[in-house]
Length: 315
Length: 306
Image (cartoon, each protein chain N blue to C red):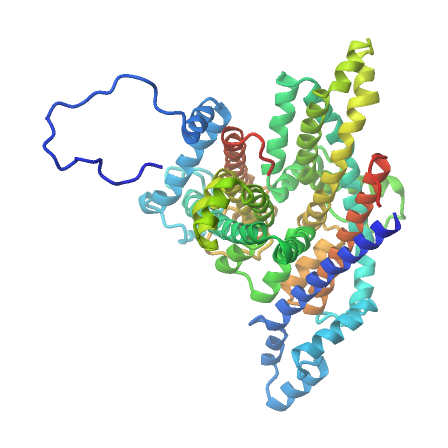
């Protein structure tokens, strides 16, 4: 167990190193890199002063090491936009994104697993075809367009749910209020991951149902319900856990669109506004922090995998 | 595939009577079997018919339509359908149908070029990793894993912040965020095939690495590449529409289905149809590509997991 953890931690560090190097190189070497800021300054003197202030007069390697060094201390400098500390802004935004993506993940699992089970146990029936058809719609529908349709229905026509923000402005915090603001964005975000979960659960369960132990269980007269719940579904869940590792990046990435449309003050919305404002320190920090979130959640998924399947040892 | 070489004796005088071969069915090649399986898959065939139509519209439509998609008619803003504007006009009075047709060309072109980029990079990385193994494999696949761990849209936004928006950058960036699954599949196939006897034989007679990869191993992954290409077009069209919707991809006045939806929210009360048409077209096209990709996977290689 210990060795496995160390191995995975080393892998995670390598991935992070690659990610941060790529981010740094992209921002530093690009034609529209930080130097573009300087074209706005009028005299060569001012330009030089700003370059020194931003540390751009030093060689690339030095700048890189400095950036890595401060990033390790979670210091990403100040935003080009409002001059606030980048890590403060991110700490404000990150929990909101985690709340939104976490809810969407739970929603995907609660809907996706049962739908996959129905699809697999009633293969080639109307319910299977219906589930499959909606899975295809789910992967093919543009998230922002789906969001517009939902707002049109639930906010405009029915006025059941609010269309934007995390809470009603001015109102004191209440759980009901927060949840009502969470429903639409979480639904849209879950649409990105739900179809994959359904398809994967379906094929995993179909594979388990063809196994000998299922036949044995049926032969000894175990009711079908128990064959499924005690044996087949449990085993089918194991590979499904691995697909979560693929779905988490997608969920976090989907937050970009969802948060922008629903005015959810998270990392995705921040990424869009920083991109439009060419706020490089912010963009770099967001990329690295998002990568850390994804890597840590993948590590957790891996550990859950071992906990679900006792045959796996981390030797 | 049949070679173009003329049959032996083709230059000899041949009797004018046509030779009709009656006998056994044509040989059951992989492609024939796949084509037959595909023909028996109604959703995939319907998807293919739709895609042929929409691509014809995209290629020929802008030439055939009399209306100019860029000319604004300020008097007829947000008008409903009329004889002059069959699908009405947008918020500055441009013809919606003409913009949808030109938008089809833009969106489909971005999807196609981004797919070519993602497939090329994916095949190159996967082939090198799978063929050479060892440290090349380790290095390339760690890099692939790192790219896979990153949420696509955040990477795209970071790249657009640096390189600026616009059709060319958007297309390249989308292509460069979709190659990883292709690389993994190609690597797996190369690993599997490179230890087979026909590769040993090729190596034994002194065939060079590049030729073994291109002539002997690559044909083995063509089915996987076709499926991946179809699914990648779907992904690219969807991604383009998202970043254009955010105002960072294709920028007006050039229309794309995504940027036509940019203002849809604002005018959703006065002109809901503006929000409907481009969205339906994106959904239908992406859906068709996904159905076709799924059908091709079933037809070519049911084992394939992409």
